[in-house]
Image (tube, rainbow, N blue to C red; front, top):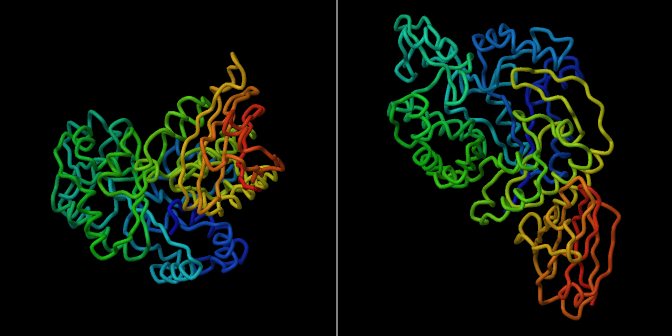
Length: 491
């Protein structure tokens, strides 16, 4: 596994729905073709994340189909919506076993072996904060869930529900975070209970045997300070002992956290290999260079363990969020800086419609040739040894001339590969033309001639190493202009 791997998130149920229509029968995980897996490997991906393989039960499905506000969203996505298009949220899990309609656990094991034969690792989801309303624990272990009173139900009915259980009627909390109403198709697990924590570690150990890594949904909600703020109960830290328990038998198992609220460093210290870099994503959307440059000044002990993305199943599509020129510049900043590189199904083709995790069908969308062409070049560039295993550093930029204000919008960086192999990237992240000198403080350039070849376009420049050391690399770029140069020493 390289230092900076690439991950492809695949919406399993949506993709199998497409395959079902193509082959004229219900497709399972066994129907992912060898050609499709070969393509993912050839594109340079190291990981495949299969979204929504676990069982979603009839209770969550019924709630998904009956909520008017959700149904309006689904109808916006699919104007020809049918009930069978709504499979229930992939994060309202009834049991951590692969749904029978997908082929069951055996089909997952066979797919994992086929991925492994191509050098691809398998990532699945772990949803630690909540379960579906018809999970077996509701009857077997009601004490595992946050329980409430009639007064709490009356005060905040959006956060509580009354359920019939084997222990009699109970008022149970919906899963939620402290800033939003509860998710009505879930029940909140109670991490103040030591027995619940041990049971979840057992679930984690079991499903870790079926994959090589897990993306842990809303992982920060289990932090004791967050849990207490949400539920008013004290809990012990979960992640350090849970991650240690898995790694006792699987030393290299990979944990990726969905995390917000600037808690990435906290979860890294608790054992996570990668944490969502939502802060970078938000700053890319804001379109201001200075906060991006400041974000990239963090130490590599932090940046190396971030997961960088332009879209995922929760965020809107990149093609619908970033204008064409901005999209390419944002992708360069996201995917050629340190960290895990997360790509989402449909992103490479320029899809514009976000698909809710409740849906099992997506609308047909045409491929955007400009976006597809750009990503083809970018993925080819990401094969470069320097980008996968090299040493990264941020570069300084200076004014092209006294009083020139364009420098502020530039961000530039450098990758050192083995030997004399290195790359230089720069972006004018602004809606206006800009100029600067990129400082290249590398003594080995003295007396050399260098060629700069853009891996994302036709540009090719010859430059004197002595001039580069004295003044820097001069750039004059249009709005959102960018380069990813492979630098060669000619003499």
